[in-house]
Amino acid sequence: MENLDGWRDVLRCKWSVEVLAALHDGYCRPSQILRRYPELAFKVLWQRLRKLERLNFVERIAFDGFPRHTEYRLTPSGRVVAKWAKRLMESGLTLDELTAVLRCRYMVAILRLLAQHPRRPKGLQAWLKIADKSLFERLAKLEALGLVRREIVPTRPVQVRYHLTDRAQTLLPLLTDELLAFPDLLKGGEKRQRPKTPTPS
Image (cartoon, rainbow, N blue to C red; front, top):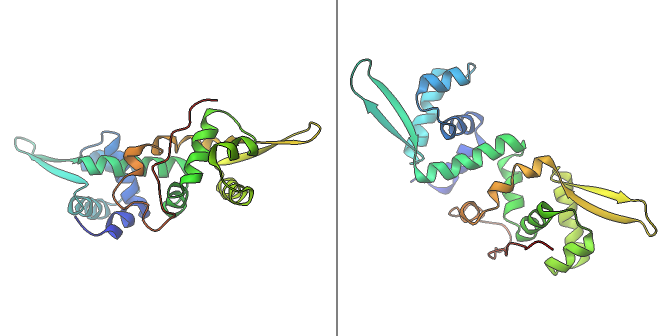
């Protein structure tokens, strides 16, 4: 398998992401993928498929008979990367933005907690056991990325609640141990610990 930057480059490439998503959706033949993406040139598709094959993300299967044809199938590691590709497309985030979130155990925990129900900062802090400054820095980053939204409740005193956005909902399938543990995916971020899945409260 090529080096770590190889698959990172794949997920940073528009057409590689599109091809992985098509294969994930069951489009096996190059002709099917070209019909799905009319603006995709055959030469570009062929180059992307060859690279995915070198990375061991897809396998090429040649069928005899008439007419002869070739199909491409995702390998086990390719299925994992294809899930990332699908979520990248649906969320509108870049790979760098997405990995910056997922390599921070606190931001992952915040998304998991808010997936259960909206929460006030004090409620989040009670779960995360971190300082106010650290909590609000992470909430601000998630808000800037469009993953959480802040609601001001006009009570006395005024209350603030945080909600998960629709964009963040598309990322929830990535918050699994299988995908978070993808080899070296989150290398270079905060030192990760296996995050505990919060229970409803």
